[in-house]
Length: 289
Image (tube, rainbow, N blue to C red; front, side, top):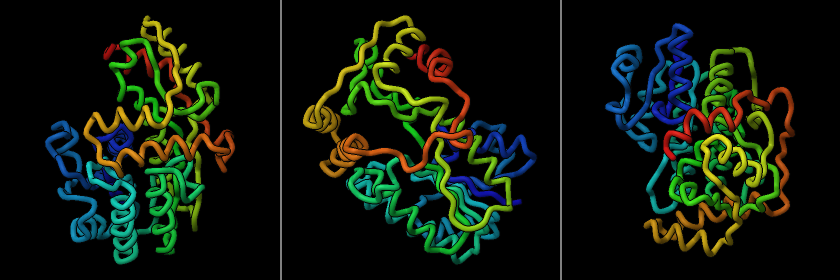
């Protein structure tokens, strides 16, 4: 079985790679920076070095592939939605031309709205592009990553967890490593046909107030949740050097998920994963604080 993995050094992709190796496979990794791989992993995989937006590179990586794990890579491009759409078109063409048997796409909660969710709009368009290939495709609609907490360590050190979401609204939070496990279970299973959607919601829905309490207990620091408005978020993102399209991509995500949004895929035994925020915070967050 030949499986191609994109973003293999990320929070999810690295877990996908490790599990495929432990299953006895030699996956093909498509990435820009092979130096980020540890030596033991590097000698057990096949590498295609290049950009996911380059059609020739993606065609070469997926030639003869049985399965593809496609993730939108982090981008500094001015318009992240346009970049996602462009890369989704490349993925779809490679799937079609190389007759890839099945695709697992890392999407997001909110993609079911199709429009009005900031950067997630690009994931929604990629879902549509992959479906148009006619290949079996599974969209993993993932909840809010635990690892997003690592993006504002200064705020947590100051004792504040800031968000544009209402601090008392529950939402799914998930460990990216658990997403990797769900992905691999489906990559290794050749029997599913057509289009499928599978939510990955973590162990429980959490409010930001609850998250602040969990982080405080896990790290020994007092932390409180604070809702900020969209303009405050814009100001912070602009100060960090983001373009206007990038800023609106982030702002739009929060706005789209807080305005009368209910995930299309309810929590069930299929969408619930095991790792708790507390255990993750003790292991991964506390050392940074």
